Length: 225
Image 1: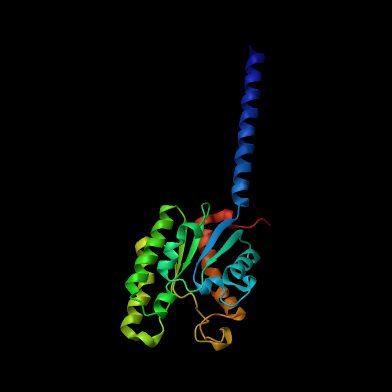
Image 2: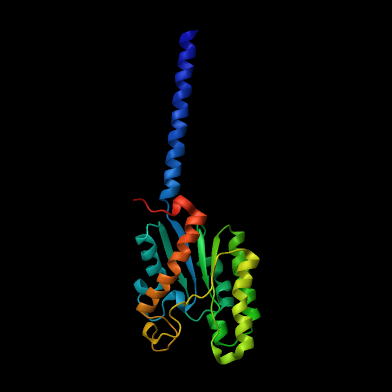
């Protein structure tokens, strides 16, 4: 009787040990899997007139990895895209398995003088649909040029913090922070960042996103040392 009891006890210990090993391996696998990010935007994301290695997603990925974050960032920027254009291609631009999307849209709506309500409606639907898929969202804001007047500027620039509040998503107020208006950091058109401009955008944006990654994904976002 004692021998049988001992055998069962050993078996239980072995089973418990096996379970611990499986749980440990599962946790390690979860941490090892990079956080899958899609940079979803217009030409500012796509890297207008720049090689892919100098576009925002590539340079952001390099910066985050250098800072110890395990990430894969896909470039889903399309030059000329409006917010409505982004909404129309959302499902095939953001594949299943994506963990986080950086939404950067609305600049082309503004440049065309389109009613801000149109961009607001499309960006809201983008955020809503991503959240319905359990995908985290970071919203990047844009400022208006002065051509359309103060009333337009106020209405347009208000759409971003309003959406961020309504959907409770992390908000980066101005995607071109530190670059807009600096001719040394833009192409000849005075709007799109050159390589140095993208480096500046990344330098400003990366600390913000690193905080989001740490808060939302914790140890999984930390690259193996």
